[in-house]
Image 1 (spheres, one colour):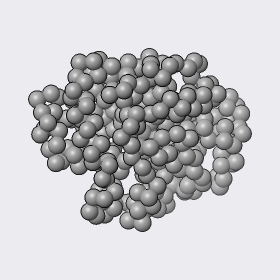
Image 2 (spheres, rainbow, N blue to C red):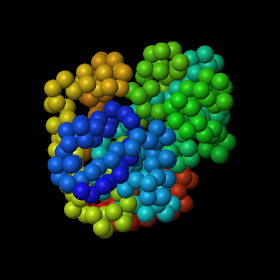
Image 3 (cartoon, one colour):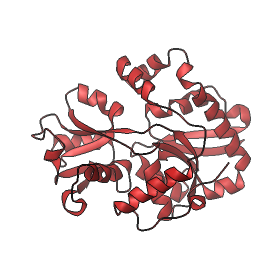
Image 4 (tube, rainbow, N blue to C red):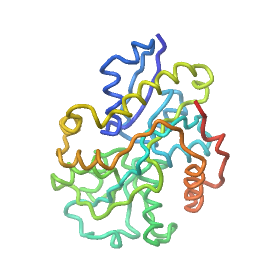
Length: 284
């Protein structure tokens, strides 16, 4: 039985992986798929892909595009979530800041450099006509727990993270959400190490076939909204809203989207060059 290691954030977007693992669908196909939660997000997973700690990952589009350009030996093989990710912009509940304009020039908490929380701070800054060199400052806090501690203790001033994941923290009165910033592209893709693609293509095809069959019917699973609410400790009405906004994909990312992501990252000086579609993606 082929052992495969995959990483992802422990969030509702990835419930389909948990369900297919629980149902034993990979083992039925001769695959010992081992899932690893990465609380530090895309930056942490990019590092794990580079070192071979994992073979594949469900990562943020902008993060993995940047890291492949920077030398990560991986390829994007598929879009996992087609819809944009809505990033909430959060401050501590007792913070003096009440608007996005007021946090201009203050310190953003980020999980790590190259992470979504880091890259989307640039997108938010540009959206609000800030000066990128002058108005962006960062404090590395590793994960969501670190952000709670950092904002509460004043180590950082604001934090960007997926708004439904942070909604329970807002509801508890720990964070206040002062704005939102959606990604200008599909939010999650599946990235796989190049050596794994070359050596285990058939195994990869079977894994993608299993997960795609589940995401195709995900919204029709009986009581899926209650399952998500219970597992991720979210309000049912929030889960229903999230489900209505979220679309999964079974196709690879298209050339236009890759071009748009690279253009934006280059414009923001996050990357210093663009590379070809073929260097970033692999058709499976």
